[in-house]
Length: 134
Image (cartoon, rainbow, N blue to C red; front, side):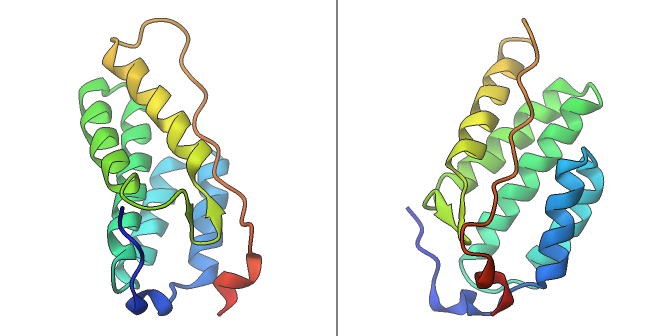
């Protein structure tokens, strides 16, 4: 499991992070992906791969939203693999339920989208809101 290194003290803009979460919750997965890319570019150190994985999960869900099952499955699987290298409690948020829901979504894609579509993973709430203000 990857532990964030000391270089992650340089935090991305809390506004970009907040907007990304709001866009995700509103169902604007493309906009969320775009905002997360700003966060990813502003990050140094080991958390870059966490953000990259999160971006890929969002892009995978976006592909599924647009009916591209093959692209959705591939990108979602890569993103989950990256995110799962980190503790579930990352960035002051509990990513465990998000990852579990994304895993169920991936399994649904792998079965050929049979049955009812699983709910989109819920964006986690910040447990430590002051973390992003540092």
